[in-house]
Length: 155
Picture 1 (cartoon, rainbow, N blue to C red):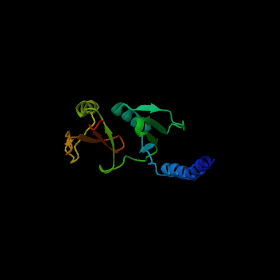
Picture 2 (cartoon, rainbow, N blue to C red; picture 1 turned 90 degrees about the vertical axis):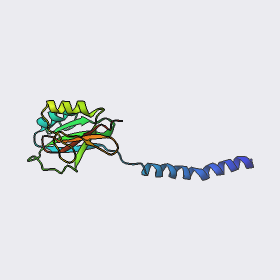
Picture 3 (cartoon, one colour; picture 1 turned 60 degrees about the vertical axis):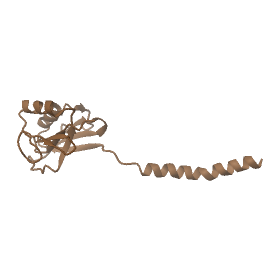
Picture 4 (tube, one colour; picture 1 turned 135 degrees about the vertical axis):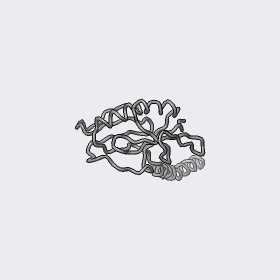
């Protein structure tokens, strides 16, 4: 009987600890990326650009107002294009979206066929940056001037 009483007391004493431990682990979980929104001047032109250059899968968007295109980025989240920018922007290259591909050379051939100019980080046309860790990267702009990086850090 004493043994049974001790087990009940021990169980009740541990229960609040287990609950608070579970709550604190939920409170400490890191946020995850849901989507990136890009404001564009011409939704159809930008939709065609991202679809053809990156081969993103277009997904349903809830607004159905002709001002949004949504793409899946797989586990990374989504890319939302939103119609409404008044003019092409003059963006700094430091503010860019980066996408990885398995191999950089075939990707470069693809954008060359679409007459998309690219450069290395320093701004040298038709050049590739080789990072110190061996990753190759290029930079180019979307139809609204947003900078994009593509690298071969595909894991």
